[in-house]
Figure (spheres, rainbow, N blue to C red):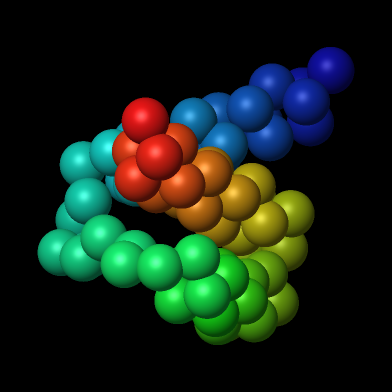
Length: 69
């Protein structure tokens, strides 16, 4: 149960980072978005493990949502 709660927290933090746009850019196209997702995934997942995966996923989906809606 604690692992599920921790995963949801990191997913939420990823969404917040995507909404606040701390990195100063929005993805201009879907291909740039996918490439950025892969690069962030390669960098963060080995360092943070599952936490990094949920953080990047939240950030990615937040940017996709804000771009289309």
